[in-house]
Image 1 (cartoon, rainbow, N blue to C red):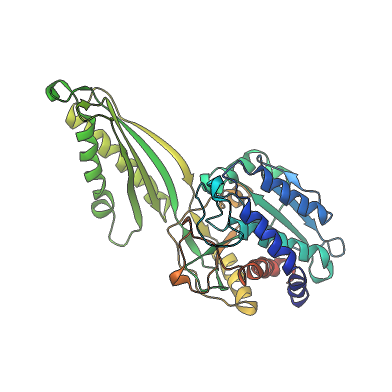
Image 2 (spheres, rainbow, N blue to C red; image 1 turned 120 degrees about the vertical axis):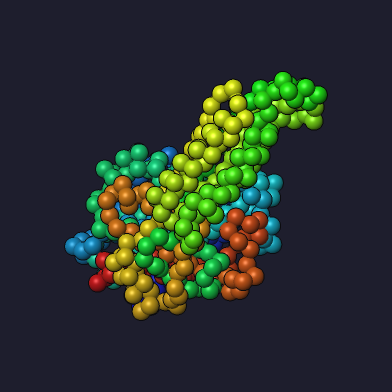
Length: 395
């Protein structure tokens, strides 16, 4: 491990320059053409032959020519940005005129994986086997992992033993890493509900079937799903984030639209939330005598991130031997990473990386001010990839 860590020291200036380029050039989900091209060039400069899978996705298979026998590890890094105008104060901040930024740290993830790949390519004597580097687009829309799988990822890469991924966060001390077994990120789903009605003049409410009143009744009762249908201590969230109906004070509209977000640490709980949402909305529509049935559209569906116990224990043990390590408490955020190992049929581990020296003062992910400390975050991100993979590639 010392050889690879020394290699990271040698490449630090290059990695910092690369990170700043990524940070200045954010692109939103599934439109990351410039970023994908830069990743491709970086891999080709190392003598690799990257594949393009799932639109803007990039994959590089790093075979060890000197020590080909060994484990096979997939490491995934997402690289899409957000439609958020940056307000971090960094001298390498994204142009505010673009209205986009890397407010979730995916630029850290891409730089970290590229740094680890470079160290492995330059020092084949320090490891054995194979690393499959997956640069995934579209995480922020829960689209990128599925796009890569549907584009034949499983058939286009060699078999792997395990899949790994990380995320820079404010919930861990700066420069620390931590993994945990079991559910570490929740499911998440957007539910768009359309409630039908019958419009009328505001002075003639008796001629209408008012979807606004029905929507309000539904919003109130939806709050009882978690508080009255689930056992105390069961984690679940039902958020009504948007209520839209009409645009005039004296016109009763003919429909109302609710947009909900659900989260859970258990797939059965998530199914219960969705069933209850439909039951409650249908019931309110029936009680109001609405002229039609409500409709339900499910989108931005994020799976449960449920770390394999043995894999998480192996990764955490490796972390403890080489890096500042803490416990990783489950987060209520969501990810689409697990789509890839689930499709490949392999165990996985997803861990957290602390990105701020003062996490209690740091802006949260997706905040316009989110921009992790340059160091030790970049060094630790690449180190974490190498250490997490080491039980399979160096054990």
